[in-house]
Image 1 (tube, rainbow over the protein chains, first blue to last red):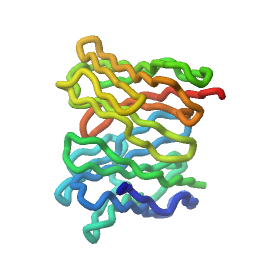
Image 2: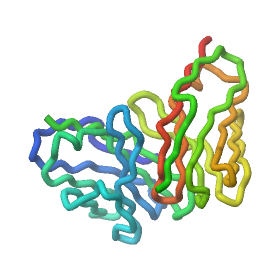
Image 3: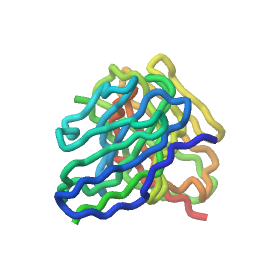
Image 4: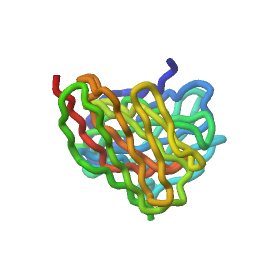
Length: 113
Length: 109
């Protein structure tokens, strides 16, 4: 069964550094998402992306965050200057239509020290 | 603002029992409700999606129901197995999902 793949599985970075989290969505999907889960808290929506642009973003997704689909297969989340509170599990997801089930990757655990 | 709550936070039952997990939401104007399973350190596996016009969905031993008017959904697991042990999350919305905090289910052999 097709799946969403995320790399790396775990990333450690120092505060203030830039990080790029990578995702390969399911190949025929058109909608792409990033969610995050801070340890012990609920899964939270960050951003949705369709037709090469952001379709919706949450208040968490400020100017420090950006997304890109650079080559038609990868989908990336960049955090420009990481903060301690950015430490979380980041999940990428994709769906074929806007109203169909979201399929999630296994996540990237980001630790900011 | 949509809020999603899941009760109980944790549940431990012996193998073979039928069980029900509960999910409630505050805004009944939802598009979809989706149930996920999360294993420790892993991603979210989609189990069932109920569209707003539907009342229930079934997949194998799982049955999910939706009552929009009361703002509730239940996930029924029949004949539970140790492999069902995981955290179960419900989420409402279409693209922007709002998640509950999950029910951590343990099935004891």
